[in-house]
Length: 473
Ligand code: ADP
Image (cartoon, rainbow, N blue to C red):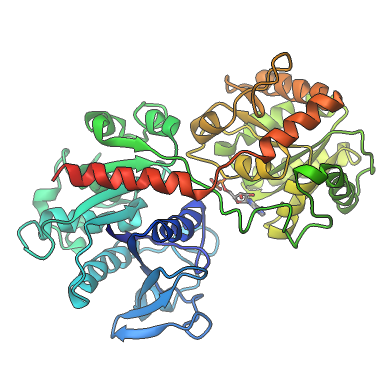
């Protein structure tokens, strides 16, 4: 199958979130399965053509290869919109560029132009999040009668429903689309317009990054105002959980951790724990359960219920090691708590990829009390590192972590459902109690380390999804 993968970010070239990881892994795996998949993304300033050995295809396109694969990557060159900016979407301080609409309209148009320039007709155009959604609208609205594009089918992937790509009504003409698109059944959204809505309205199939989240976004609580539209397209909405790149995430080969280990040498994991405790100036005690949390410090990630629970958690005689950045109120709150619990709370306010790896390797448990979680990566990485996830039953966390039953030995982590501090505390207590039952704990660790969340299984589901789209033609 020929697949054109349109993404605003791709690992290792540019990343702000989980979408970039998917875009760097899924196409690679699809290519290994024998498909002709090619990617387009903008050439941001941080993408050095020399470093990545890019070659000019024409005035507006660079061409390169996704490292570790044969996947062709096209980079859209535009000095004013992309090549001269430090950020992907925002100025430092988190303010959106005021011309994001023009930037990503130009990107989507260039992507479609490229196909004609190289005379390549993909069967599937797969777009990701609002930044690439206009490519779908152009195909279905602008190019509907163009014989070159007419047969191309479209997939729209939602990586986080909360990003709607909202713009002021007056700006609509800048997309090149007509006012006929400004209706409630097309792009209009409460007086303005949404690019995510364009993707959902016009794509042949829609998917998101877990089955549970595919259901959740069809509810008022998680649908961000587009749940009604999604319900009306329910038979075309799918969920496919993300995979993990085990070439990167593997405690047996990870060069960034003090002691490498595998299920057979699990006893070595504790050396990473001791190092992690030391790095955080906490007492180096093997018998004290260490709970790690590496996250954006935001309400989405459950920081509100975690804050409320903190004193009770400290009462459980465990250590909690936090790595994250985000909302100032959580920075301030955690700093205060660190003063109160210097021997139990490890606090690292910043983004630190190496420390994140040490936490996955050194912690006994990994906490994700998310309010919502489209897929979640942390729990999958934790599994591989024999670190038991403690999660709320939402989105991808619900699909990938089953609650541990100490009688039967079933389950892969500790799960609570109610978004409430009491449920969180109760579940952490249960995890800490289980931690002290050595044989039970070790068997659980060995089990989760052997789980397979590699990309291959997920990529095969994407192939089925593409087949569903082509079946509609
Ligand atoms: P999201 O994409 O919503 O932020 P995910 O769980 O899908 O959440 O992925 C987040 C990834 O980023 C995880 O691998 C997590 O370990 C990592 N991460 C988050 N915050 C930090 C940080 N402060 N330092 C290092 N890595 C981080």
